[in-house]
Amino acid sequence: MEQTKQYEYVDLGLPSGLKWAKCNIGAKKETDYGYYFKWGEITPYTDYTWADYKYCNGSCTTMTKYCTDSLNGTVDNKTKFEVEDDAARANIGGDWRMPTQTEIQELLENTENEWVEDFNGSGVNGRKFSSKINGNSIFIPAAGIC
Image 1 (cartoon, rainbow, N blue to C red):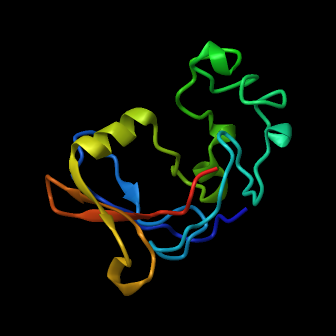
Image 2 (cartoon, rainbow, N blue to C red):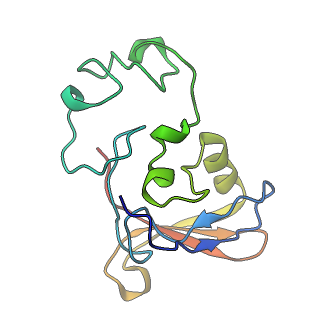
């Protein structure tokens, strides 16, 4: 796992004081997609199937961890990753961790966000979040969804 790169962060002046990474896990710059992870797993992957997902029994309705809806499996109401399941902690180290749903909501409420095509001439599309508080911003490339 990658734990040698010192990741930079951006202070968006959020009420919680949380700072956001300048780029995705595994990315060398903000326009790189970085690695893909299955929810609650720490090893990057290239192909997603329910059959090999660690926290289910083969389908999207048999989740065994990080489940908040009984239609998706066994409810445990975990909404924050345990340390051993946090891709940021495992791949970057230090105090880095994945944001919670509440922290993502804080980001949305305290920034202006816009869809950007060809960010800074990079050819990469994505969403730019600019702080309403201090004007600092982060760019999250549209890397897809599985």
